[in-house]
Length: 67
Image (cartoon, rainbow, N blue to C red; front, side):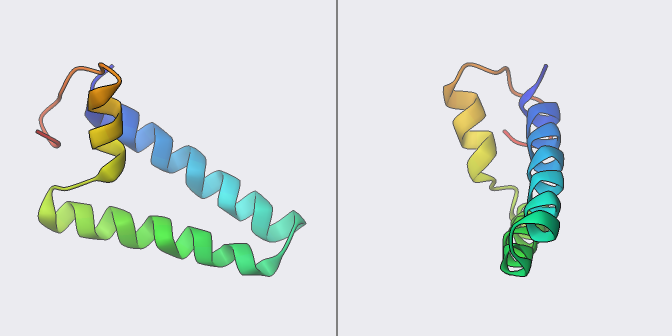
């Protein structure tokens, strides 16, 4: 697994988790979903993703998107 696939999987899990929390816990968790979306959007423009940095430090090999 590369950092790229790890980030995409992590983002997918976080989106699904935030939607579940919004439905079953509180509608205010929709802001968590918004935060995830904004983070994905900014990383597509800048190439910087905090999750990619963490995965890299955990020893996941680098891919093409996040160097």
